[in-house]
Structure formats: C-alpha cells, structure tokens
Image (cartoon, rainbow, N blue to C red; front, side, top):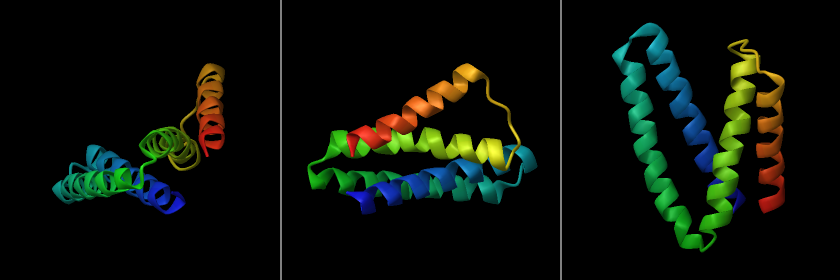
Length: 100
C-alpha cells in the first residue's frame, strides 16, 4: 500500500506545483505537464484500487495531499495559515496516521 500511496502523492503534488507554476507564468508547457501528470495519476489510482484497499489508500492519499501541499505553500511559497487552517492540516496528518 505504501508504494501506491507514495506514487499517488508524488504525482498529485507534482501536478499541483506544475499548474500553480502555469498560473504564475502563463507558460503553456506547465499547464500541459500538469494535465499529463493528472492523467497518469488517474491511471495509477485505477490500478491502486486493485489492491482491495480503496478506502484506506484514498483517505491517506487525500489527507496526505493536504499536508504536503500545505507544507509546500508554507515553506516554498511563504504562505501564512490561520490557526484554524493549521488545526485542519494537523487533523489531516492525524487521519493519514490513523488509517495506516
């Protein structure tokens, strides 16, 4: 399961970073790369469901994405989160831990 989860998280984070880059630069290559990465992500997700752990993988993937993108936003983009948002990210991190 961890292999599927790492693949899903890596692909989704890459997609979001590429699409964010496009939104800042308006360079079509970033949009196309982000879209292509999302297509690959869909294929990987489809195959991950064959493992029979869809609920666990999907929950960990979605919550893990919240944590990773929040970390990227804070560390790289220097975005600030409110206390309420920080609590939400902490809850998502806890969910990833609990469903494992």
